[in-house]
Each structure stands twice: as structure tokens, then as C-alpha cells.
Image 1 (cartoon, rainbow, N blue to C red):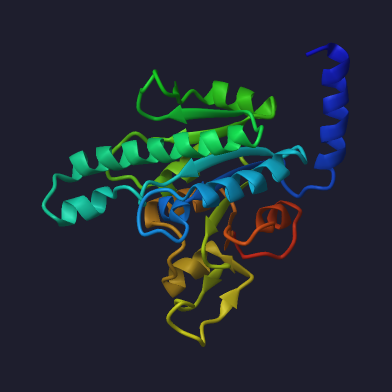
Image 2 (cartoon, helix red, strand yellow):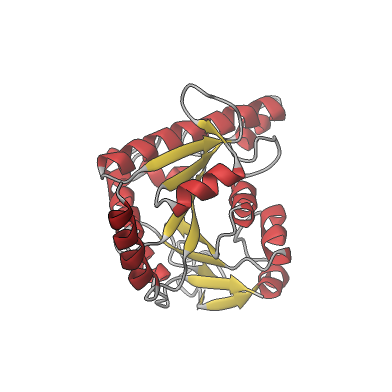
Length: 254
């Protein structure tokens, strides 16, 4: 790439960034989200939709990192409940997140988005090991970085991995993409009278006993003043609305 083209790209990205609320985001996706309408596995159609939404955001100059779960393939907790050793089950869950990461990487690259997959466990033949400085360098160059393998340790969820990586790469916000359009005082899929919060504090979430993330992840986010936005990722265009500052989903902050 010539010096002239690099300067041109910097000017364009600067103009776009002036319109965006965030410069660097960490998008947390559940493994179940990749199932689409299936009961198990990965739905290529849903992957392609996510890839297009993520591409649209990167074209505005937003730096995007992604942490993805593995619940569509295997959950360590579920294995432990059925008699499996918890550590062994969690290691299987970590590998499931890598499979999902590879699938999302392929979908993004099919959409012409340069992508790197980094894992907390070393699988050098298929992914880079997680190196903070390298991840941040990729982001600055406009590449999407997918973090697989959770934290690399058993007993920690991918929510914890998302918060940890967001803090490490100095992300402005965690965007938790779900199938629900925010945080409610009750389960909106079961209770028609459930009320949605547009904004709520960390303390109120804990006081009301609302489920946003597991306690470890949530407390880590609170201690590092890292806001969380919970929104419906399955509605096309919502990701763009969030990063441009529209009132989509629920924001959790101090």
C-alpha cells in the first residue's frame, strides 16, 4: 500500500469516526446466536447476515473485536451436570468457540473483511495465539479480530473472556448481541408485562437481580468502568444503530 493511499484511508476514517459514538468496540456473540432457526450447529445464512452487519460498521472506520461463545456446539456446565469432569467439559467448550470463530472468520472473509482469529489456547495451525499488542495492531490496521478459546482457563465463561479482552484492548464499550432487544425486569419471552430498561446502572442490575452476564464478568466490567450495551443482533442494521449512538437496546454503566 502506497503512502498516498494510507493517507487517504486515514482521512476517510477520521471523517467517519467523527460521526460514530465509539472508535473501538468488542462485540460479544453467543454460540446459540449462530444456530439461526436450527436446533444445533451453525446456520450459514445467519453467519452471512452477521458478516454483512459487521462489514458495514468496519467501513465506517470502527475497530471491531469479537468474542464468541460455543453453546451451539458444547457447554462445559451442561457436561458437568451430566457427570462429566468440569475441567474436561470446559476445555471442550473452549474448542467449540474456536470452531465458531473459524466459521465467522470465513463468513467475514467471504464478505471481503480482513479478519484474524486469535485463541487463548495454542492451536498454531489454525489461529494465532492471543497477543495483546498484535491484536491491537490488527485493529488499528482495520482488521476484525476474533478471540476464541474463552480465557483459556476452565470455570470462566465467554462473558468473562469478553470483558477481559475488552479491557485489554482498551475497547470503548462491550456490545452484547442477543435475540432480545435489551434488559427487562422479567423474561419478555414469558411475561407480556415485562418492562424494558433504556439505561440502568451496574448497582441497579445487581440490586434487582437481573441477568446480564455472570457475576464475575459483570463485576470486572463495573470495576473498570466499561459500559455494556445489550441489544438485538438478529435485527439487521441494529449494530450500526448502536455504534452511531441511537437509543437501541439497554446501556449498563456507572
